[in-house]
Image (cartoon, rainbow, N blue to C red):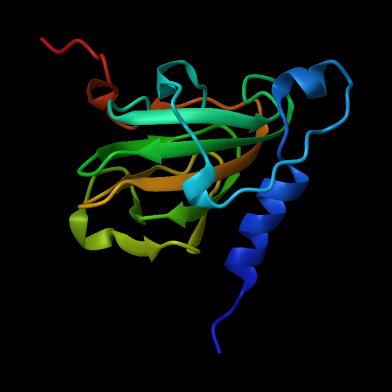
Length: 168
């Protein structure tokens, strides 16, 4: 029998932590969101979302909290097919659930395809604070939910790998 923990965590994340930063900041009640991955619309560019890789071909939506401030947050991240994220880390520990598609993740200071772990929908992994990790998508788009306790940020193991880095 397969473990249902990943799917339960996914549901818990979407139902109990879903809301908007505005509602939390205003002290208002958390919004209720019940949705399948197919019903979620993630259209905002990830370029302004703190705590994600900023690789082109990503879109993100903050469901709860504010990753720039102390406190719990959840971000939905949509990655297009054939996207590679070079080794990076975050100052906060995070829990990631693959909601749809397949994500490949590995850990270390340099990208190494042999270290990639295949995670289909329902797969989970953790990102301990300051642990370099890397990932990629292959032939399908992928949607992941990232939950952490901010403030967050992103530091590339090799600064030249950061999107928008100027190389000489």
